[in-house]
View: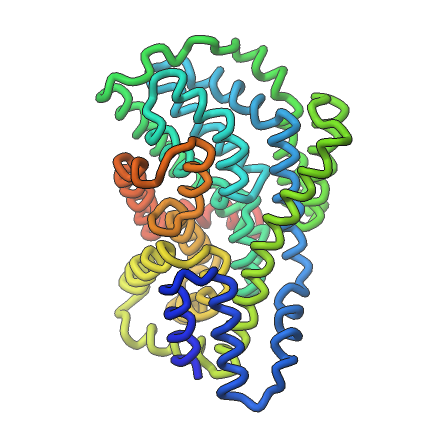
Length: 425
């Protein structure tokens, strides 16, 4: 049954059927053709897949990101980041990366980060003489930090599907996030010097204290959200609701950039985005349930343990496999279908589950900027008004940098686990 389901799913992928529908149809084929269950079990399992309290955080974090975009928080974060790193040659691309790192500590979504920060940064980069395609490629790459630095929607999904502590996964993301962000900043500074770009990047930069004052309420938001989680006051789901309330209060009453009329389009956009992700989760959960009933995760884990000599080779094989998967399959679906299988084998090899989950999320985040189906690429291209073909001139360097960081994160686990061990263990 499992081989037939996988074949149907791959054929539908090749036919450009949307990911969620392809997975759902493959699962229905499995139920109808290879089990005695009535088809009503499909509706039941779609509901059960979403009947998990931590998943409620997803729509709230998406809504919070959209509220911050319209409420002026993203613009103020850009000015603050520019006041720190914008005064050197190549400072504007560095500002884009630093802003995405800050925004990532609020939104939990790479696509939301792309739209919110890209709407400000891409026009600014183009105005200062950077190629449009470079600006779009940079924004797409930097925005992937939105799912690495907590809070992170993929980490929530990994925690739910593998029963791993979500707060530990969250705090484990800081080390890899700062590593990737720092290496990206160094890369663009060197790149701009070689190309002769960005010699006037410091023009219009606000003094640090002025920018800090303007961005004060925006910078306090990660403290409220993450402080509640790590202080044991709130769960990640409760923190997501607090983020929404905070963004509304700041946008409507402090910055006064959100009016009552703005709320409907913000909520509508957030509902549509949430529905897309949750539908993928529901279908992938149904698919995963059938695989589990067939014992596929246990069998696959046993095969992996027997055929990879030690954790090092296993992690290398997983990284190469996930890199290919990330090019074609949406991140949420990949995690829900593959995480139980791969994590089971990793646990048998003695690999720390928080470390493995972080490696998996970072790898699939890389898939967000790899053609042909990198979601960040489509979002950045839409904001910039360019094509992915033109972005391909600049993407290989960014992909190589992220992959190099992934290898360091994979084989130097202390980067990931030292902070969770310090806080929780």
